[in-house]
Amino acid sequence: MLATEWPEYQQVDPHTLVDRPGTPLLVDCRTTLNAESWRAAGWTVHQLGRPGK
Image: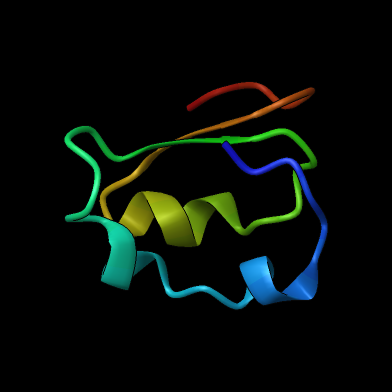
């Protein structure tokens, strides 16, 4: 779960983290990340206030 707009988190490469959790699921509470980049890296992404894909 991401609940901050800090730029350090926006610069994280999703490919480097995808193998860490058992299920790569991201809830972006601030809708600050590029969801398509995270999805392309294998993550399921939910952003509050935006329809899921």
